[in-house]
Image 1 (cartoon, one colour):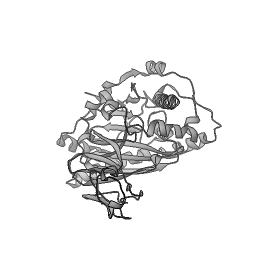
Image 2 (cartoon, one colour; image 1 turned 90 degrees about the vertical axis):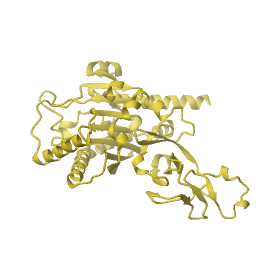
Image 3 (cartoon, one colour; image 1 turned 30 degrees about the horizontal axis):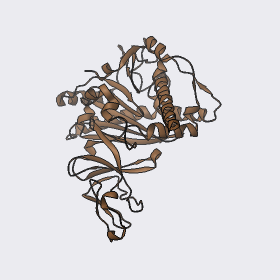
Image 4 (cartoon, helix red, strand yellow; image 1 turned 90 degrees about the horizontal axis):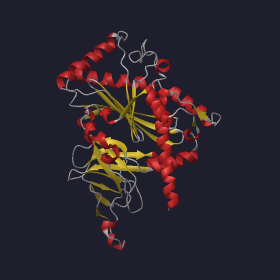
Length: 396
């Protein structure tokens, strides 16, 4: 089943009527006070994609993730029991970080300051002269962060008691997400970037095709055509806080350059041999995860974590199944990953320039056209989440 079938997919005109057509305030795209509300209302209590099971295949495997908006360093660890847990990378004695390594494998974590030592389940194993602290060992284990795995992807939630499990949060998408190639990935190609833009400004760039013919005149030729000069999607879908779109296919695309043809040809051949087959998907999961499937063999995730009101850190991963055990397969993977990287890099100047234009507050309203309705949906969802948070705070 196509994962988009879980969304309420609507043609443009019907979707535009549903979402509305008026301008929206520009303030949430730059205002520090609004950003702080988003941080508390959304990012400190939403499920966030932070890694993949293939990074921690064995007991004792760990990855470190530094989460800027939470001012937290996290250790994501596979325990001896196979469970994946996330802990604050901070000794419960006086807060010293346990490791500076980005990843590794070890059976325990020792604080370099006073040698308090913790197991992969977060429990305190030993501490010098501990009897002088007059506290029970079970009360000083590593501080844990809610962690769940879905479709091979690791999600964390800073809320001590999340209102929903990750499966409840994604609802009917769960079964189809677990059929995607990312769910059985064994490796990935990754690149990270930081951009001078609000997380919504950055995310919005990947929610509309209005800019394709201007920003991607070379790389976007396969997605625009005489019948659709802007490459607009044909349908838009909504499912709670999540969004999707059905991409238009050019029936008469220009010839593919020889270098691209060779790369795509190898990808198609290897995908067929490996039995890789899935429906094209393009959906945006709240708050900041974009997953794109490009048949036959490419699937990438794009996570956009805020660093502040005007800065965002992005992580793009192209996921693979099986080893790159021959030169042709290694070439295909590198070619596919770098092709996507080049396309995404073309957006940077426009996104940062747009943010600079908003920062002064001179542009008080943002005008969204019908094919920018996914931007409007994200905007409205953020407004709703902040309003819900403020109501909870007022109620005490």
